[in-house]
Image 1 (cartoon, rainbow, N blue to C red):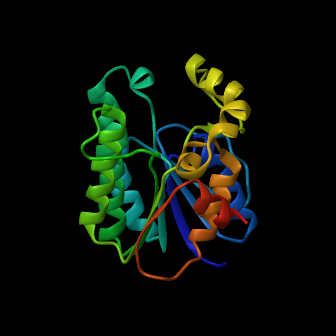
Image 2: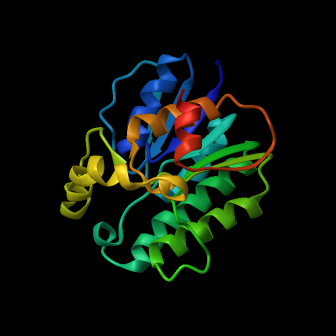
Image 3: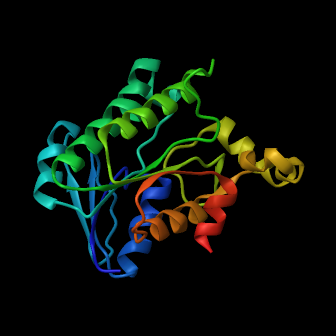
Length: 218
């Protein structure tokens, strides 16, 4: 795999693992972020700047593939509006800049349960982000819908999330049949699945939930 890939959200749980994995596979990786990742991996180039400057950075990079690992929570963001500004507005702005630079393949991390009519603001916002990406018109769009992410090193401590991770081995045993998509997703498995998709040429819009993510990761 010899290509140039740009990742937004490279300072997060999945983004860090993905950047390292791609770089070790010989990919030229560019991270656009608002804070440094302190990642000293060969082949990884960091571009730390306010998000308003990201379009110009992406235009200079001209990536073959653009990947969004952007994501926060309402609690961390401080309000619904601040959450939407990241998980919807910033993702779409990054995607639009990538498309305008000539990128035709985009991968984004969304969430299991994302639905436009959901009564849950988080899931509704994710669904609206997905639709916005479809409207941009990439030749290939991959939407990752993991459940609770486990493993990896986290920068922020979230008590509710920590409890969910602790209980996930027991809860996952109950996730059978149609409920399998709600079983927890190891963050390194998600990173491996995204890396595999970055080298997949077929066109179209593809949604990947737990079974698909695990299959892609090999």
